[in-house]
Image (cartoon, rainbow, N blue to C red):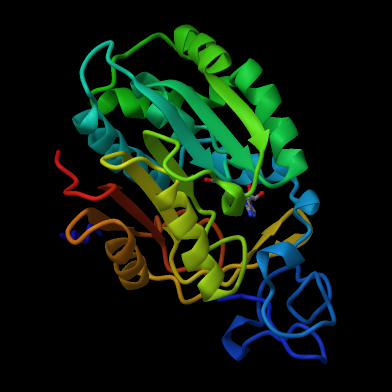
Length: 296
Ligand SMILES: C[S@@+](CC[C@H](N)C(=O)[O-])C[C@H]1O[C@@H](n2cnc3c(N)ncnc32)[C@H](O)[C@@H]1O
C-alpha cells in the first residue's frame, strides 16, 4: 500500500573526493572540493566517516531547538500509527529501539507510552554523551513535540511526568546499526540514519535491513529518510548521504524487507518558508509492521 502525502554526496577517485557538477555550490565547503576527507577514492562508507566530529549541540540547535513543520507532519503520521498499534492502556510492549538517535528525542517520545524500555543507540561518542545527559533531564524544547503527539491521541501527561518517564525508561548505548541483535525489539524507529551515514546505496540497504531484522514479527516501526540528499554539514564537518534514496527507493527496499503491502510511505514536502538547507528534495517517512499489514 502506498500513500503520497504531499544536491551533495562526497565521492571520488584517487585525485580526491569529487563533487558531482550540480552539487558544487554548497555553502561553507571547507576544502573547496566538496568533502571533509580529501584524498582517497571511491565511495565514502560509514566506517570512513569520523563520527566523533559530529557536533551534537550544533545539530540539535539547527534541527530540534524548535518544532519544524516537516517534523510536525512526521509526528502526526508516526503518532497516529503507533497509537493505532498499541496493545491497550497499561499493556506496554517490552522494548523499543531508536537506532542512530543523534540528538533527536521525538522518536523516543513516539515510543514512550507503548514500551517498558526504550534503547537509544548511536555510533558517535559525542551523541551518546549528549543523549545520556538529555534523558536524565529532558529539555523543555521537547514540550511542543510532545504536545503534537498528544494531538494524535497520546494521553496528555503533563510534561514533568514525561520527563520522569524518559529518565527511568530510556537508556543509551554506543552501538552501530550493523551490530544490532536480531529479533530483539517490539517497536522501533530509525530517523535519518541509513541514508545519512554513507554515500553507498548498498550500505543504506544493509543498514535498513539490520534495523528491520532487529524487530520481532508484528512489531510496528517508523523510519524517516532525507529525499535525494547531497550530504550535510554539522558545524564545520561534512557528512555523506545516499543521493539515490527517494520515496520509490524506500518503498522498494522496505516492501522487500517487511512484507508485501506491509508498509506505507509518505512524502513530506519542504516547508516553503523554512527549508532545512540546500541539497535535498524533502523528507520521507515510512510506517509499517514487520511481516504484515500496517493495520491502523
Ligand atoms: C543525520 S543524523 C540523524 C540523527 C537523528 N536520528 C535524527 O533524527 O536527527 C545520523 C546519525 O546516525 C549516527 N550513525 C552514523 N553511523 C551509525 C552507525 N553505524 N550506527 C548507528 N548510528 C550511526 C550518527 O552518529 C548520527 O547521530
